[in-house]
Image (cartoon, rainbow, N blue to C red; front, side):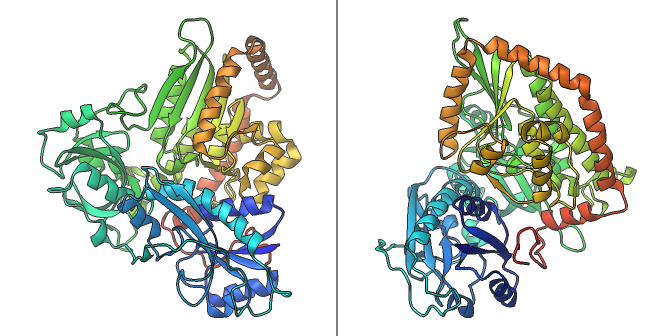
Length: 600
């Protein structure tokens, strides 16, 4: 079929659908929902058989849904309606939820149900559930809906009656209103930690929870429970609502029965144009956080139970403990939204250096649960722009260009640690999506494994024609060949797991989701560590690295890449700075980028 995706933004669900339906053999184009006349023009140019709306913020015009079948994806079970479906599901602690594909009509979320898929709710944030459970269910339901839909003879013929009426159970929820800040409000003097976490999880991603921190208004995101030891330590320190400690990007806030960690915040607007940034809490409130005691967490710590504790990095080892077999290391770096600031890159670099001393022969790099990595931290870089007024260093000439330069050097340093770890085998395990420098951080490992739902964006050009670094000029052609490497870097389109394995970006696709991947990756790593030819494989790896270094040193690759990046950051063309500014401040598109709108 010819399918037009109409979406408010080309988000994670839209990208997953794009890659899945393209793998199924459909022809796709994308139009951002800018105006009704723009959508009409797209339909005239592309002549689609159907329109799919994965993510919209307004109704589809009647002229459009009468013209061709328009499939709406609603993140709720049949019968549920309204713009805050997942927010309410998390807030009410629903045990089961679902996704419905329905045909657009005049009434909001009330058209004929074409397909639906359910899932068990886990204790996660709205954003995490959307990226994982909702996205997987939506792909299955859309595929089912497309099979059931019987099209008119002509895609341009008016569709006056529903064209498919499969049986679907009636939902009991009905219309749910837009969730407002009053519904999300936190009362530090009364709310227990579980209530605080529930409210924050129901708002994570967007819009956050309006509250006070350090006595100042802010929107809160990225909340985590404190473990038993931290709660006991916090008891008696300050009053509910007081900030009592810091760790990594986050601060610890007292509640009536313990404490919660707040990782990221958006402060109330301080600039004349009202622009604000979502930043690490310790960055947004830098002076206030610096006065707090630091309560670090050990790198090796439990994953569940009362002693499980939050921190950005976590390491464990498994395998034979009696010295009869090789051990396997598992390193997580769960950076919020996959963005890696200079500080976070340096932490990862230092941790990789420490792990060289561990007696493992296979090291798995698991990244984050929702994102493996998305490369340099654009929000953190934007905060260094003089107009934001958030960086004290601005008085000494600091800038977004300087922050970009520091960040890319730190990112390269982390990739270098992987590339030069020649005494063991390394595997990047993509439990979530990866983008830009995060893709090439993964390629610095010997192998890359992912599950079927992972989407990669292994290119930089969408961010103002960035050239990119992380040694991609070494790792990418080595994997896929020079011609394919050029096509990938120029393509600008997301790549699903099936295509990524076909062209060589992935070595294995294990399981359908993150949970299946993790179990299979651990099992396969143990098999790899126990293989009789392991020593030979490690020796061959070291020999290849030495030969490659003699042919062209890694430092030369890095120097050549950074020469181009320096031009992006400091040169006369401001494209990168403009694109970054529009991205971090969520400024709407005035037109659909041409690499998405192939009909144009």
